[in-house]
Amino acid sequence: MNAIRKVEVGGDAAYAIEIGPGLLDDGARLSRALRGRHALIVSDGNVAPLYLQRVEASLHAARPDLSVGRFVIPPGEHEKTLARFGQCLDALAALGATRDACVIALGGGVVGDLAGFASACWMRGIDCVQVPTTLLAMVDSSVGGKTAVDLPSGKNLVGAFHPPRAVIADTAALRSLPDRELRAGLAEVVKYGAIFDATFLDWLEAHAEALLARNDDALAEAIARSCRYKAEVVARDPFERGDRAMLNFGHTFGHAIETEQGYAGTTGDGLNHGEAVAVGMVLAARLSSALGRAPAADAERLQRLLERFGLPTAIPPGLDPQALLARMRLDKKADAAGLRFILWDKAGAARIVSGIGDDAVLATLVA
Ligand code: NAD
Ligand code: ZN
Image 1: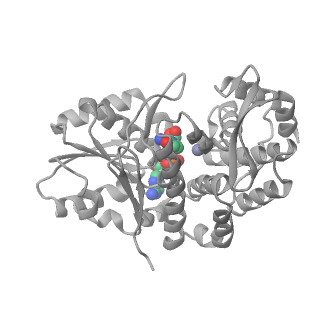
Image 2: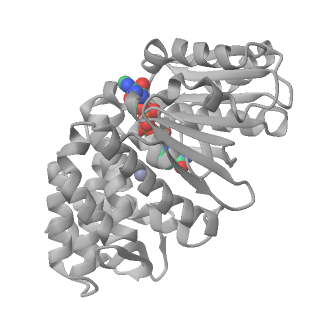
Image 3: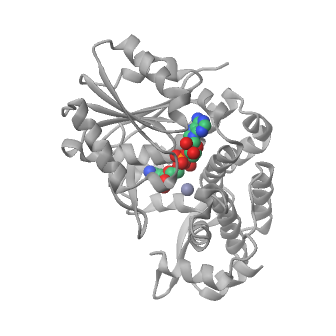
């Protein structure tokens, strides 16, 4: 059964996430949120040759009156820049985009963040439809309204909260995704189970093979459940002033690893984001049990599941624990009392904990 799954995101700017195979060919669905006569498709050099023409054809069939432009960037995190953002706005100007125009983000999180930010700024904000093509973008970056570009001084430093008008996730597009990108997305999927729902971890354990084989129905179920967890916390805390920060489980350690290796993962030399988060989640789980907050068996269970997905669970050799600790202290997550972490009481139940001492963190890093 390949039913289309639908997840509603509530709050002031409600929208729906639709998930299933073949949605890129469904012009009626793709164009449902389009109010005006202009649409700009933003994509990248890997995704555009695979899917851009198909999306254009679907849109044209459903809405022959629509004037559709395209803006294609080279692939990679290093393209998520203010310069590309400016070019995206120029493309909207060239299209003659008016206030009822729509930006369609067709790609992974890089395209989604850049296109989302351009839509947040063009004429002080126009509609954006997210059409994510990586698993990470389907379960994380396309949902929740955070948009941004990077600066030389740091990632995601310029951006806006700008929820999409709709999210349309075609699971069939994941068939062309490199294995490593699929696994990186699975790390974020596991994260939702780890912090919100141990029964989702049971489900992932039972469906690991189907997910790795890219079975449409298993993928759609994993994406829908992930989006539901994220939607709930985003609706409660749209601007990340409180418990939306729970989504950072594994990310304090993960970011330290990513920055310490100079974001080598974006060039393929080091851990990518999802891989760093996989290691970070195991460390956060171990720190929780070292502090007597959670059963050690749960940390081991999390590690085994991540390993089944082919994800790393140990700090890469050569990274200095002291240097990682120093990174975490710089990462806005420390105050005078100590570091702040998302820890868990047990699998499926996490909380934000401040005032963790350096000694405990260091002991986890060297263990
Ligand atoms: P990405 O966009 O770089 O995509 C990964 C790679 O896969 C790229 O080379 C891309 O060209 C390729 N690709 C995409 N779809 C494909 C497909 N279907 N077939 C073949 N190749 C395909 O990376 P990502 O992991 O999707 O996203 C990472 C970005 O998302 C980062 O910039 C991160 O900051 C951002 N992010 C944002 C949020 C948010 O809330 N806004 C949340 C998490 C991550
Ligand atoms: Zn993440």
